[in-house]
Length: 260
Image (tube, rainbow, N blue to C red; front, side):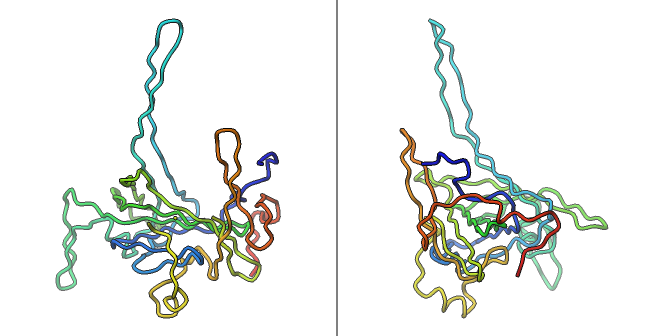
């Protein structure tokens, strides 16, 4: 039961983050270790003060009825997101103009209604040792409308429109916890799959851990907690069986770097 306000995942202080995109039709992330398998590409560098935005629109309409009553209906709307990238990475350049053609070293840009489409994943690493991996279940539309160049590196906003699947599910996410030795244990799936030869694929270079994540991840366990008509989800450490709680242990004073 979530009676204690500290019960839950310690997601307070973000240490690192990364956006990855997969333009193929087979996006795969290993469930047990959090390794990205296949054709995932990093969006690149981001400004330290940028944000990963995510908006799920639900509009409402209220009809007033007799007797002082009212009825409200709800309609699911667009699912959008936004991230800031620094220009120069191959992924950023492709999103800026997916219709561009390169001939003899010259790029010929094309202005049309063509937009980049790809699966999107975000990796968030917290000072508490948790790693959160979020991935879209369908290809999203990716657009960069602004190109700013200045003395200092300028962020170029990437507008993301997520698409709902036929089953009305649009994302998957998993949590992992990083051990003191740098290894990870997963907290608690289309994108997340069991890969039997993940270690061999990592050695072969066909799978990798994003720089904002960590290697050697292990899965955590989700525990269902029935609270009235709602089912709450608590996360347990797979080794100790204890429910995850937020604490001050992972919170560092400003300016202090992570210990190696």
